Image 1 (cartoon, one colour):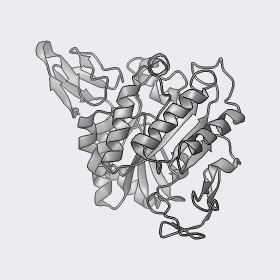
Image 2 (image 1 turned 135 degrees about the vertical axis):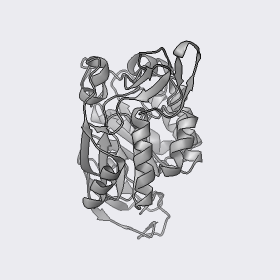
Image 3 (image 1 turned 90 degrees about the vertical axis):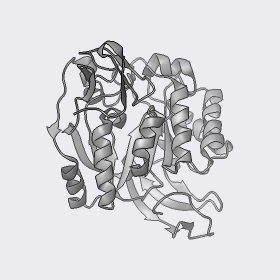
Length: 337
């Protein structure tokens, strides 16, 4: 289908306005994501309705810990991504169009079918996840708009590289997002992701200002983005620019895809990052990919009691009533608590 958000240029070229790459694409060619193509001066989406993954997930898997905890989210994806992360955990589908040129697969589904499936499976929300929802923007937008009509929430799990034009369009239907803030230096983004940090920071601040509920995730990679100085800068940015009420997930790296020369992140590094986040004033800091750690639980920032007891993606106890700690009455930030 014809893409949203592009300009026609001279010589049958087009410029995509969906993400911060703002690709200028010649006739017959594709953008960096490899799923948007210029056909005779018109940009088209090659993945509309071509669903390559669909699952019912606990919302904690996104991860979103402060948005209707314990609920289910109908999760979908198409192939494609506008990043080229060397540590991509879903490279088989996210990088498929790049690694296998011309290959786009997926089961044809309509927005109506997605919404019906979510309701049938008692899901509270639809998550656009696994790959990068920005590159299947048209399908995500149309599905999200319909989902709102049926009382469902919409979530993006995203690298945060969409433009302000894209946010203007999806914003009214986007209730929450978990954004990967992968590091806090431009060299890392350029070398390991093929992108720029500045665009992600702009998107994060804009999402927050629009009232989209926001959680942030950082994958800590040994020797690349794990220095206490960089982690302190990153945590400080979250606290100052997004607010101390923004949950920060610190996730453990495991060797994968094209980054296999480094060991898994030591647990003590994650705990150092955790302390850095707390010292920066963040109320809700979590560690991920290490089931059983105390730091995957939600503690009251005021009295220190456990409010949400988690094991992996399971919620075992919820001690929040009407958005307040049941022990001391402190207001706990989030939606549906």
